Length: 253
Ligand SMILES: Cc1cc2nc3c(=O)[nH]c(=O)nc-3n(C[C@H](O)[C@H](O)[C@H](O)COP(=O)(O)O)c2cc1C
Image 1 (cartoon, rainbow, N blue to C red):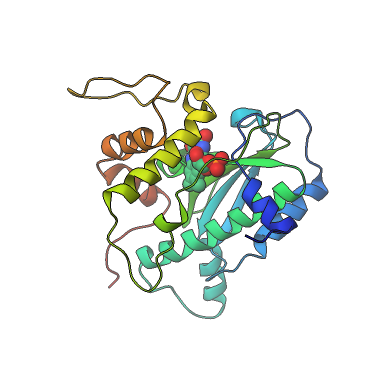
Image 2: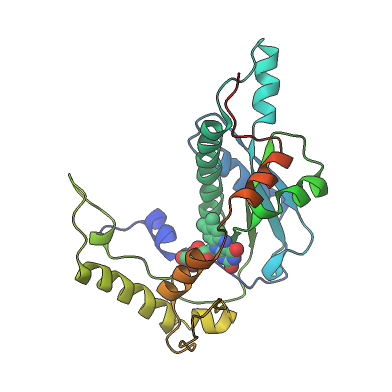
């Protein structure tokens, strides 16, 4: 495989959950945000909220990355147009704009010696965030990103093997051994770092499933299975949060 300084930064990036007290300068913040802005966009549907109050994991910067239809509608109104595109389609585009911008910020931060970590519970707290930042309607808080100078050192986390990711010309039949190998790589990698033990992050079982895992064998595949096997069954709650932000998924007349 080839390498160069950009590839090295990409391959060494990891989510940082412990930050030093060093506060990034205004110039550093501006650089990170400009690099974020320069990501490809469908419609520049992403805006950023910044809080410098102490963030989760002790990070000095706390961004909330929003899908923003408000600005687009202001521009369109000046051109004598109103949006007729449905909110689901706009949201899909907005999520891509936001994700690309956010990841550019992550990589820019890495290149300046900082680290970062996404926080994914944001849509479920959208109404509260709307109040906190006095968001106008049509701005939806999608994900948060904390950032600062790392106060912990550890190797990058594992990823699926390449043959479980890149499918050339046709999607293959995924054999048991391919699935098991992907699980092994992920689980052994996270276990080697004591990832879930350090975070005390075991998800509690519900119903009649009996706990048989300890932090000696609880790893990524069990964790992710519990998440999507237990959480967020009903779309009502998140739809409700979206509605508070002025997004609806009905057909337009
Ligand atoms: C959309 C999204 C949401 C995430 N939410 C959280 C979160 O709420 N808390 C957290 O500690 N990490 C969160 N993460 C970080 C992931 O746990 C992390 O990226 C993943 O375990 C891979 O580890 P790495 O980033 O160190 O390679 C999130 C990442 C993404 C992309």
